[in-house]
Amino acid sequence: MTKHNSKPNILVVNDDGITATGIKNLMEVMQEIGNVVVVAPDSPQSGMGHAITIGKPIRFDKIDLYPGVEMYKCSGTPVDCVKLGVNKIFKGKKPDLCVSGINHGLNDSINVLYSGTMSAAVEGAIEKIPSIGFSLDDFAADADFSHTKKYIKEICLQVLENGLPAGTLLNVNFPKGDKLRGVKICRQANAKWMEEFEERVDPYKRPYYWLTGVFENFDKGEDTDVWALEHHYVSVVPVQFDLTAHHAIQTLNGWNFDHQADSGLKGKNTISAPDGINLG
Image (tube, rainbow, N blue to C red):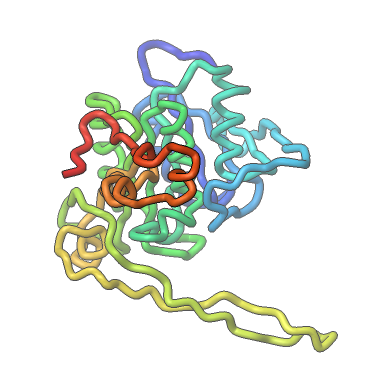
């Protein structure tokens, strides 16, 4: 991939597979902005999180799915797609933007941890590429993404113009339907799946299980992604891949580790917060 004229180079990935309607719509928006390369799994990879392929080879083939679009299908995970795209197509010369999606189904709240869509975007951010994950509250294979396009374009243009803080990416979710009230910058809601495993029996009388459950929101705040989506806003949550609980460092520094007293290290079990983090 070489950069043509002054347009930005854009890597497009997803987790629903290269033939998904969502990635086609995202690709079409990106073509209005820059030079597009699509790298996507050859089959659906939802819920893969940040998995990578080890211990077996990855197939990586160029395909002609849409005229005039440089596209590759990958036998690996969404994160594999980003890694291969950066290393084999861009050859280490980073794209100007990495976008993932548009996912069929929301990735709000705790879902960000399980999402292959968001993990692909996180991998882009780890590579220091401005990255965004996009998701729509519609699981249908023929979902209508038309109402998302103008927002996707504007958000991407803003990121290209202004950049993102170091170690940060965006998680963008759209409610279903075209009656959107605008964009809300949000925090991740405190919510989780109340999971159940439905037990069934196969023809050989062996039990197997289907994961089911209900999504429960414990968060009453009106500044969360769940609230925004329920009130017909596009939710935009800045996400970081540094999982350090900085607010807990001071607490842990107050612990007394007995084994350290025996080795003469008592009082040395302190951890310093990074610059700019206030522990007090």
